[in-house]
Image (cartoon, rainbow over the protein chains, first blue to last red):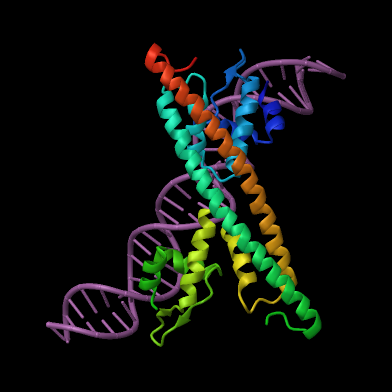
Length: 127
Length: 127
DNA sequence: CTAAGGTGTAGAGTTAACTCTAAGGTCAAT
DNA sequence: ATTGACCTTAGAGTTAACTCTACACCTTAG
C-alpha cells in the first residue's frame, strides 16, 4: 500500500511515517519502480503497536528496541528475552504507582465532592 | 528554606524550580528581605508530588491543574471533584492498557527465552 | 497535453520541558 | 575590604518528537 493508505489506517501523519522510517522505527518499507514507498500489511501492525506503546508513555528509543527484538529476524534471542523481562518489570512498577495515584485521586474526589455539597449549604467551598 | 536546600531535598534542579515557579506550578514561595526565595515545608511536599506525577507521564499542565484543585484555597470544589474523577478514569484506563502490555511482554519474554534455549542446541536463534 | 492530485527529498519550524550561561547583587568570614 | 559561596534575572541552548514548507517528480482523467 502507499503512504496515504498507511496514514489513513494508522492515523499517523505521513511526515511522521517518513520520520519513523528515517530513524529506524519503521523498517517494513519497499519501493515501487517510480520510487514511491510500498508498505506491506505488516507495517500497519507495527505502526499500531507503536501508537499503543507511545500513548502509554514509551519513548521512541524504547519502542524501537522492543520492536527490533520482536522482529522475526532478530539476531539475539537471549538479549531479547532480557529486554522483555526488563521492560515488563518497569511496566509492572508503573502499574503499581498508577494504582496508588488512582486511590489518591479517588479519595480527593470524594473529599472535594463532600466539600462541594457543604458549600451548597454554607456558600463556602473549603472547610 | 533557600533554593539550595529545596534542590537537595527534591532532587529538582534549581533552574527547574525557578522555571516551575514562573509557569505557576510552584506557588509556595516567599522572599526574604534580600530578595532570596524562601520556601516553606509545603514546597517540598508539592515538588515531590510533581516528581511522582511527572515520572508517571503526566504533563506539567495536568499536574498544575490537579495541584491547584488540591490546594486548600481552591476556588471551586465542584470543579475540582470533576477533575479528580476525570483524571482517575484516565489513570485507570492507563492501568488496564499497561496490564495488557505486561502480559504481552511476559509472553514474548518466555517465547524468546525458549528460542534462546533451542539456539544453544542448534546455533540458530529463531525457529 | 495539461491540470489535479499523489509522492519524493531536504530542511525549517514547533512544542514541551527543561538546562545552562552571563552578568551581577548579598553575605559571612578572613 | 576582599574572597568565595550563595543568590538574582534574562535569555540562550538543548532534546525529543513531531509537523510543516518548498519545490520537484509521477500518474491519470479530460
